[in-house]
Length: 260
Length: 290
Image (cartoon, rainbow over all chains, first blue to last red; front, top):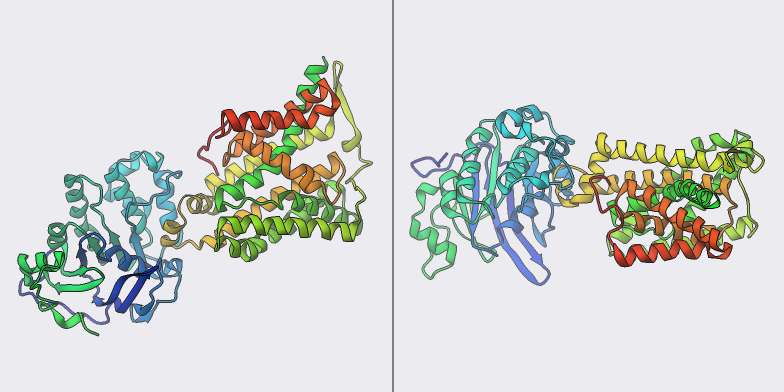
């Protein structure tokens, strides 16, 4: 699951997700300040950064939950900046939101059914979700609110997969979960990717992101501070980019996607 | 024996209150819209029924086949236009908009239909007839209304728990944004919920027009108040709570009337206040449904 050993990036055809000079405000606060990058099919693209770096805002803007002040979001070459989140979802952008956000008064199976309600054609069915996560079948009639955090996260992933998306946005999977549970959840990614899925994830846990990602992109206070494959960036570079220490090497590792 | 009679009559009229309350509860539970025009819309449905019966000469009881769909469409359109517009601003805006709607409807009805009261199906055996058990006389109509209310609640329960749109309505009520991420257009889902709520309002309006008399002001001075009381007593957001709330309200009123005829309404509201003070979450707190 790690990037190519030589540090080069496989560029295949049109980028599936392309973000162009994105500026997003939360009231007066400039949460994102001119972010650009491209995600190619089959990549695991990880956005890392500290709290408040703008990672979740970026993901939510791609999903359509925030409107950018300027800049654009392209999906498979088409500008989707003006589309509502539900339209983007039906076109193949699925998101596992921060904090799971399961429907608490619905059962596990009903949560999955909602995920499948506007699904595209594709490999994921409720049956397949049950086969992939085998504990779920026995507890399908339980209320989603009764599950543990890790179980809820798995149901949230299953719900997103059932849309048969082309790109899966994962917002802070590790948040509030025990390390062993985080390990297990990230361990499932290869299985998910086997279905030809592109993943764009946001993660505070840098070591976890470096382990699974084929490309990383570090944000600091709404700006890009580092981009590259895990193999091409040093621990020092990542640390400097993450915390904004003096002498951070800005975007030197892989400049190809950082400037429009 | 008169006390037993009071309780039986109270339980039966509780079905009527539940018909009013379930739509109010649904709209609040899903959209967080407190629909102050709820009672007036029931009156509108009653007048539409009178119009439909007069023009088409269909049997009174079948008028609901036309009135329910008409009100459902009206519900969808109102939700997608002015109610959604208000929701996009604030919860306070929805209160103002539904209050305004209430005033407009009431005055519109006064203008077109005068302040005279009107009944629906006044000569029917169903409306006037009754049967007796021992010394207790029970009208056919209150029984029919109660049965209708139970059937409506069963239908709502089935719709919400076992159909695609019912599931989406509950999902959107839980978390609008997460539902959008699954591809659901929550505005459309809100529209469907409003259509269903207005359908129940239509039945309530027709039932009230047969049970009592409709006037342009009936919506706010009677129906809305009783619907609110039933919802609060039963528990906000609980489907069967509206029936329990309606029954408790009805029984309290009938017992009040038994003590002194002028205490009927007062007794109902004393129970309403007592529940609000002692058990503000209602007798049935928010369950799995709605």
